[in-house]
Image (cartoon, chains in turn blue, cyan):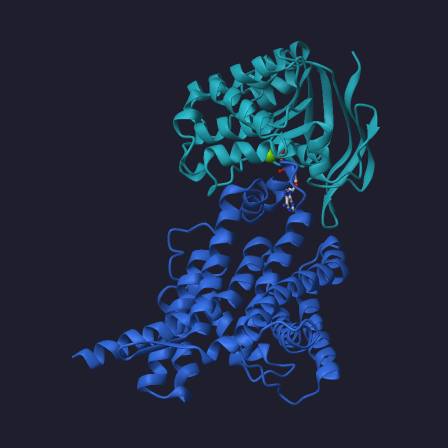
Length: 305
Length: 239
Ligand SMILES: Nc1ncnc2c1ncn2[C@@H]1O[C@H](COP(=O)(O)OP(=O)(O)O)[C@@H](O)[C@H]1O
Ligand SMILES: [Mg+2]
């Protein structure tokens, strides 16, 4: 049945697109967990900040002040959101996480991430107000059609940018001295110090990379969100589910789980209705926790980060 | 002989409980010094204090005349102290070569130097060359010990600290490791050797300190320590 086939292909494409968005958000969570064994509850707000930075870069700076075409403006906004995420990560690490970490207990930094989250949300509320913003990607209007299968340039862009980000992250971890040191820190913190590796620096670097990914994720996700100061929270729950399904701290597992959840979501929308997405995802999560609590591919105690 | 490492009355604690008190000893340039004692005596804790993995709450540590008491571990590595930790602690998911690179982290901006050092380590332990692309977690205990030792040497330390390098290894492998330790020392690196295998330790080192329940209770030339009745009884397993 060609109709069924094209439907399956169509929903798989939609699913991979959604999955890439989730992966961009979930990677940072898993990276931070893998290196410092900590959950960052402010991660969602880094995504929101990225989305707002992208929106204003595109609508104010690029198209109005610089007179750039819309598409170029959106591309520029992705770069700016990435940079804003990185800077925010740098600032929050220097001001909050690093000083608390040096005092050496584990609970306070965790609580501090909640504090940072509240701060960012209310800061944005004060700046942007509670009313959702309209964030249209100029690429969403450009659709491609192959027979019965449709997708937009926005879909293509998201998949391409995500793939490039994942490839860059892997190359960094595999081929650079700093990347290998980051893996060493995640595998054995104390011993990495004996190697002359400055852990504070590498932990800071991890937070910056994770936040940059979150910021960029915000720019990619923004057009699909109801963009208000709490927008990140709507994806973060799914991102946490993905990180758990993939095995906390496991990069490959997180990527796989992200794509999987995206595809499941697409088919759920098609066959069961959009209202059931969260139910399906969390049934999957609970099943995983029962059947394979170490995550999709963590059974061989796969390398984390 | 100039003192390379001087430990003066340090106290090391886990939480509130002191594990080592009033620890004082020295290692001179070019020397092999051993720290022996029963399980739980505080040898590992003392070495961690020297390497900076734990900061002392009392006392002073000097290295090459500089006060390093509050220096974090990575800066002590830069200063010239390397530790082969108890249980080897290789990075299990990094390859053998990557583990060695981590040991040479302080030379990371000089790729040629790191490559040259890795070649030297692989000449010393050809087994590591055979397994260079394998994850360290898949090596045998003896191979892991060779890797941990080479990894520590990658930083070209002036003082090499070893925590129970013989632990859990077959006698032949232990001999090979101790032969390397003597060769490393002959090439100019001072060695601080912690061992439960007191026989080997006292045969390898020139001077020794004996630890008991968190304190140093005896010290002297190894030749004398080997004749000491109490030490014979407690650590050498013969009367
Ligand atoms: N991580 C730790 N937390 C609390 N106490 C510890 C820890 N490690 C060692 N100790 C205690 O410190 C003392 C010295 O231990 P250790 O230095 O490992 O001795 P050794 O290496 O001579 O066997 C022991 O009483 C041990 O129980
Ligand atoms: Mg010990």
